[in-house]
Image (cartoon, rainbow, N blue to C red; front, side, top):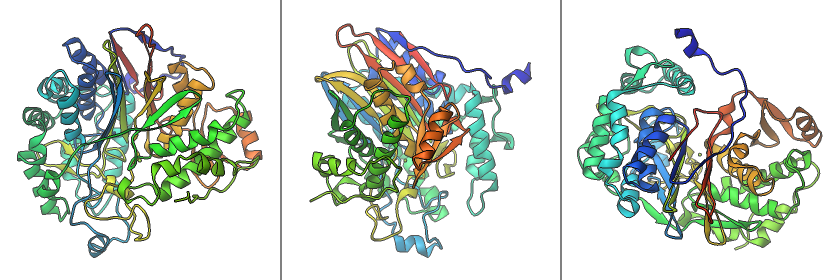
Length: 536
């Protein structure tokens, strides 16, 4: 029987949207989605379910996120949308000069230098304290149980786990000992159907739950993190951890054909999706599967991305405001650049991003769009000994160029790729959505929004539709399911179209839409991953 666990389903299966009334949890891992549903059935609300699912994902999908990462959330409750920025800052004593003294001209991907303060535990505690019905102790129980008792590894998870194992084996100049002890016991990545567990991870989650995350930032766990950093010559200190705050922010939006599309403001890249939608709103689309539609989408994304790369950092340090970047006047200037041929995009000057995503909804009308990440799979490769905490490498996105807007500085939030999305119409919630996956995310947001609003696709179809991704200059990668004829026509327009065989290069998304009249929930989940919707 062992041979059957190593086979992927060779056939494409059409999936339909899932419908429910009392509650819904959509994410990339079945066990995590069911953990959220478990909390709903115990009397928790959508916020409690989101926390439970997110915590469980650090256990059952550690290849994409962890306790040592960052998180963002959009929460709809009692007729209002709230934004939470749970991204941490760079260590206070890091600088370009200090990094160069360690022999680096650019920020490395791995090790302690790219490690920023993790915001995940603080985000959980903040969400629980403000909007949850249950305690953090209750919502983290499913995650603690899976970490202690173990769980069988799924096929896609095993593939990414093995990839990370091989990468860390080849990487030189960094100490990955604790990572191998935690995530590759017996010196191998777990196989499909094999059981992985971590008593250290369980104990850490219990400590976070029992102290409302204070241990992570001020207590025992903070001591362990700071000590590991000090011993390895890292910049992160206990003082940095203690200063961490999860910040409540006002979400930003554009109105797209009568629907309000919401994102978290910078330092996140959600503004890129909004600028692209603003550009596209002034254009006409008749059908989804046409060269004209794809060409215009690609051109708009290129223009918005160039702006994002040049102008986005921590909001107070930006040269241009969100309002300026999303103004009608500036958007019209960018739209005017779109012609019949593919352009080499450049940033304009307006006047004056491994990640997991989950969506939850409950019978009361609460809905949550939640995303968390360690960045680049497991992150920095640093695991705090005896804790199971894998530290993120989010600081990799800082620039060592002193003239760059996102220049490395101490105590600063970097340009951030992970973005939750939300849709409302006439001040009523439509629902949460997102596609995770580095710089694919705003591109995925645009594709989901247009698939839904312009082309009338139901949630599952909106996610299953073939995707494309702008990489750089005129290079566009498309899925192997993408129309060959349209790909050829796009090449004739000057796009450098390349077929990408790896489906996970195009992100992994979730959608939950709510009917405001009936309260019925319609959900879609990611067919490119172990996507699952748990309903009640």
